[in-house]
Image 1 (cartoon, one colour):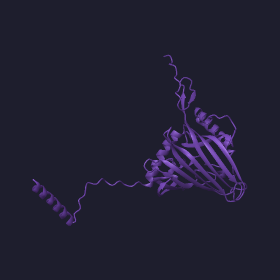
Image 2 (tube, one colour; image 1 turned 90 degrees about the vertical axis):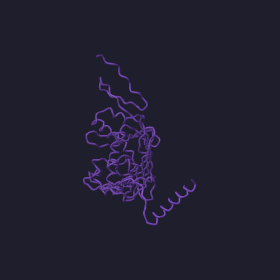
Image 3 (tube, rainbow, N blue to C red; image 1 turned 120 degrees about the vertical axis):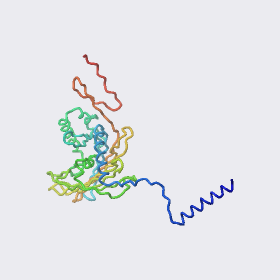
Image 4 (cartoon, rainbow, N blue to C red; image 1 turned 30 degrees about the horizontal axis):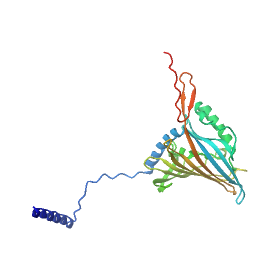
Length: 316
């Protein structure tokens, strides 16, 4: 038996040698090659992600710690302020837009109003009334900002609107590389607005074309980081030409199982020398829902962790 075994081993060895000498390569069955993703496919995934993301974030109120530093001219003394606010992303029904609003309740450590979820209560009104109230609150809060530059995109979700399916055609996208925002497999995608009138408007409605970058997960379309830049030309006395940039980082909030804005950094640089830089950090995320009494039609906000009230049975 040992001799037979040795003969078999020698035969197998000889056969392998003959195959190698003949230059024949033995192949195993290969899986079909997967087509590489294109930029258009990744942007489509990001657009779908953003639509779902906005639906979820529109029920979340978060606290914003917003610190600003302003210089009237190069080398001048700095002016600083710290605003603590409630921030809400409101979806505007009927026009497919969403708008971020902040409601300041503390300025430089001084409480300026009772702390309450004024923005959250807007869920209870009709869309037109709620939007008007939110705009009033936002204008009231904007007066605490430093610098001479009017701010149109200093909300952490602003750049996401560019990825809405109805807006992606307005932009040119190209892949700049892989690896961004500390994620090795994320795609660094540059964008440039190419259609007029632009989504962002300046003084007296002038178009302000945007450009910047998105850091995206190519498989899920998840937005990891946004960077937005634009230039506002001079618009007369008191409105100098200004370059503006805002970078927003998103992170997972485990309690909500949702990627939320975690930090926003801004810089406004005026041609005449003035500048304003800001850092906003977000915390204390609360998700609300609204219940409606079928009998009265009245709405009620239900904070997280609270069971909605049980309505008594109505007689048949």
